[in-house]
Structure formats: structure tokens, C-alpha cells
Image (cartoon, rainbow, N blue to C red; front, side, top):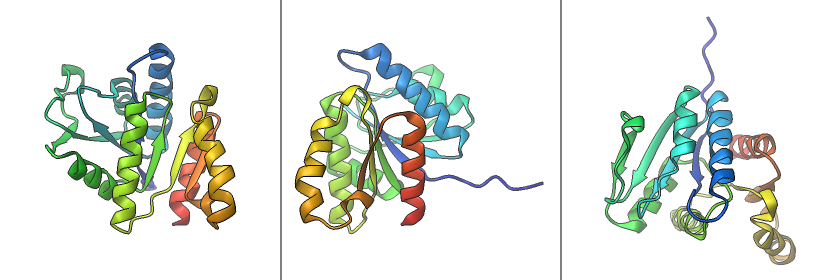
Length: 185
């Protein structure tokens, strides 16, 4: 019997708070299921009562492994019984822990809070000498400002920026890009 290859460990940043909740929940479910079926292990940062339940539920239903790094406000609902959760009181320490665990960072359209968390984790990794690739799902131009910044500011002055940050248009493209970037490291 052939052993199943373990996929990358990915930190997923997603929020279902605010306008567009139903579509964001659907995207989280699609990403969780798609990534888990390809062997990815997911790490989620949960703070201030924000827990990406659709992402975690879908990943687990598809046989995936999920770990949560949380603050003390997070209480797991019964449906997530058995999910590994590490509670860390200090936000910079949470960012550092997620950066230690993840091989790549994935941002789904969501609230400003999830984008801020992703940047915090990326910054913690850079400070510690860990260069984690970042892929953002630019659904409905959610990250268009960041894409413009990358093209206008990073591209001319930072050789190889495209090996550090990329944008995807759908879940399949997102997976293709992040898995290639993690393998190339």
C-alpha cells in the first residue's frame, strides 16, 4: 500500500464577520475541503471571538488536520470537539507561534482583522528569519489594493517579490500557487 504524501502546513486567515458573511462562509468551506483533500494541514489564528468555523468544519469533514492558536476569548463549539487548540495570552506570541507552525500563509477575503492578523504573522516570521510565502484569494477584488501595491511598489524595487507574495482568482489557483511556493522553498 502506498503511503499518502503529507501536504504543506498552511496558516489560513479568514473571517466571517461583516458584510458578505454567506459568501465568505462558502469560500471558507471550499478552501478547507479542497486543501484537506490534498493533504494540507491547516493552522488557524482565532482572536477576539473570531473563529473560522466553516473552514475548520469543512477541513475536518474532508479528513484534514487543523490546529488553532487562540486567545482566551475562544470557546470551541461542540462541533469542533477534539480540534487541537493552543491558548496563548499575548498577541505577538500568538503571531510567532503561527509563524513557527506554518510553511505558507493564505488569506481569504474577510475582514480587516484577518488581514491585520496575516500581516502580524508574516512580520513575526520575517523578524525571526522565516520567509513564508503569502497567497491572497482576490475574489471580487478583495485584495486589489495590495495587488496594486505589489505591482507598483514592490516589483520595481524588490527582486523576486513574486516568490514571496502572489494573488489567486479561485480556490484551485490558490492551491496551485501556494503548494508550488512552499515546495520551492
